[in-house]
Amino acid sequence: MTERYTASELLAVMSARLLSDGQVVFAGVGVPLLAATLAQRLHGPGLTILFEGGVIGPFVVPGELPPSTNEQRCTRRANMVLPITDVLLLLQRGYVDIGFMGGAQIDRYGNLNSSYIGDPANPKIRLPGTGGGNDISSLTQMIVTMRHEKRRFVERVDFITSPGFIEGGTSRAESGLPTGGMFKVVTDLAILGFTETGREMVVEALHTGVSIDQVRDNTGFEIQVGELETTEPPSARELAVLRELDPDRLYIA
Amino acid sequence: MVKSYLELREETRTRDRSLREKVVSLEEAAAFIHDGDHVALGGCTLSRTPMALIWALIRARRKELTVSRSIVSTEGDLLYGSGVSGHIVTSWFSQGIVWGISKVMRHYTETGQARFEEWSHMSMGLRYRAGAMGLPFMPTRSMMGSGVREVIGDAAREIDCPFTGDRLLALPALNPDVALIHVQRADAYGNAQLDGLQFMDIDIAMAARRVILTTERIVSNDQIRRTPDQTKIPFFTVDAVVEVPFGAAPHECYGLYEPFFGHLDDYAKATKDDAEAGVKRYLERFHYGPDSWNDYLKLLGLDEMLDAARRGRSIHND
Image (cartoon, rainbow over all chains, first blue to last red; front, side):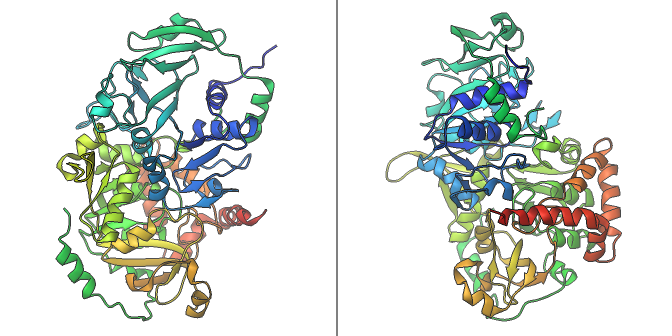
C-alpha cells in the first residue's frame, strides 16, 4: 500500500535518492535544498551541502526552511561561513561533486532558462535571472529537478541562462566549459539522462503508474528513450522525514 | 567602464584616511550619494540590506543611480518605483522564491521603464574583487557559452591564458562610487564587525570610492580593539557611520532579527495586481509618509518587530 504524495514531494524524494553519502552538493533554494537535506537525514550523514550565501555543511532545522540560500537559517550547524564569491569559487576549484537546482525551462541539450520568456530584447516575461545557476552549471555536474510540462521541456530554450550541453556533442567544451554538464533531470514523470556522444536528453526511468506516452505528450520535442526502468514509489519513511522537514509545506505543496 | 589605475590611486590618495569620528544622521549620510552615482549595496537578498539608507535616498529623491548588488529583493522594487534607480546590475532579482516572481521588477523591465543588467553571481563577486584588488579584470572559467555572457557583449572579453592557453573570460573590475553596508556593530571611526554571512561586503568596501556604514549599534573603539579578528571592514575605507537599530527591516540582520514575514507577505499582495500603483502606494505609506526611521518602524508594528527579533535571536539557541 503506497501513500499519496504531491508532485513536489515526488521530486524531492527522487532527487534525494540520486545523492550519495560523502558527496559535496551545491544546492539551490526550494526542492533542491529540501532534497539535499532529506538525503542527509535518510542515507547521507556525511553529505556536505553548500549554499550560495556562503555556507559549508549546514543541517537545516525542520520547520525553519530559509526563503533563499542567503539567510541565517542556512547557517544552522554549519562547519563554516565564508563570502559568496569564495563559496562559488569552490566550484571553479573543483571541490563540488553535484550542483543541484530547479528549472523553469529546459531544452533537448539540458540548457536552462530562468531569465526571459520570449525575445530577450523585448521579453514577454522577465524572469529573476541566473543567481548562481550559471556558475554552478558552468563548473560542475548538475542535477535539475522540475515539473514535466510541454511548455517547460522545449526544443530550444528562449535564452541560455545556465548552460547544459549547449548544442550537443562537444559544443560545451568548445564554448570554453571543459568540465561539468548535465547529469540527471528529475521530473514528476521520469528520470532523464543525456546520451554519451550526442548529449541529448534521454528517458531512463519512469515513475510508478507513468507511461512513456505521458512523457512524450508532456515534452515539447522528440525525446529519446533508453532502456526504461521503473522507480520505486516514495516510501512511508521518506515521506515522513520530508514532511517533518517542511511542516508548513513551503516547498512541498 | 573600467576605471584607470592612476585615477583609482589618485581618488584613494586624496581621501581622508585618518582615524577620525564619522558619525552622522541618516539624512546627512544620504548627502554622500549624488545623482548618477554607481551605488553598490551590501548584504544579499533578504539579509543585511541597507534599508534605512535606501529609505533616506528615496526620501531625498535621489535619481539616476546605477545600483549593483549580489542578489536584489524588494529594495530593487522600491528603487525602481521611486525613480531613484532605473538600472540595476545583479545576478537575481525578485522578492524571493516563496513569493514568486516580483511583479514590480517585471512591470518596470517589461515596459522598458527600467533596466535589469544580469551577470552570474560569481561574476558579480569577481568584478567587485578585481576592484578591491586594484586590478582591471578578473579571469573566470564561468559563464562562457551562455546567453548571459552573450547579452553582456563587449563588457566582458574572452582571453587566452598566457601560461596554459586555456580560454578564460575576463570580467571587468567594478569600483562603485559608493558602497552602502549595514552591519551589527561598528565604532565611530568605521571599524565594522559583522556576524554571520559576509556576502560580498568586504570586497565592495575595498572596491568603492566612498563607504557609508549603517550599524545596529555603535560600540567603543576599545571594544573593537578587544576583538580585532572580528573586524571585517577597516576604518580608512569608511566615510560615514550611522547608528540605525533595525536598519535592515523588513529584511533580516543575522543574530538579531529575521525577515518580517508578515509584512513581506502583505507587500507581495499589495503589488500583485497593479504593480506600479501598488509599489507607489507602499512608498507613500512607508517611505515618504513617516517623519523618522523610528516612525517607519512603528508602521511596521511592534508585533512584527518582536516576532522577527525572537526568531532572529533563536540562532543563538543550541
